[in-house]
Length: 117
Image 1 (cartoon, rainbow, N blue to C red):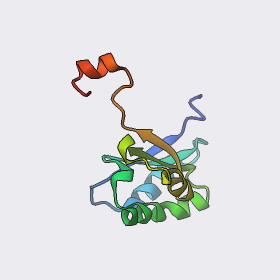
Image 2 (cartoon, rainbow, N blue to C red; image 1 turned 120 degrees about the vertical axis):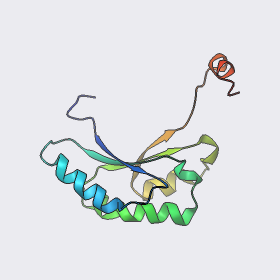
Image 3 (cartoon, one colour; image 1 turned 90 degrees about the vertical axis):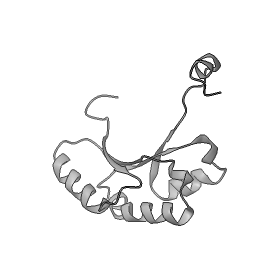
Image 4 (tube, rainbow, N blue to C red; image 1 turned 45 degrees about the vertical axis):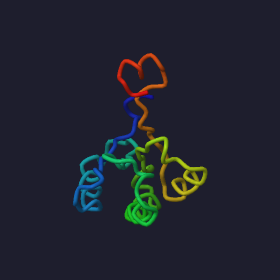
């Protein structure tokens, strides 16, 4: 992925009281003219660990940006234990294009050394 195709990411930190729409508008103005795709990322907690109503509310706030093409998509972080069979359909319908799994490692030796297994 080249610099020009790698997306700009507007970070939104879950749990912080903030005007998310204003943050996105401000950053879109800042990135205007770069020609790079822009995504909004929800960070700071497992997105799928939030209640369904909260997840849908957060995604609905960004729907106008996704629908208009002003942002290329939404990325979220999730704990693997929060991923359920219907999670992909829910996230995709809400404009999510990337799910970053909070995984320390898949290597048992690394997990043992980190005392995470």
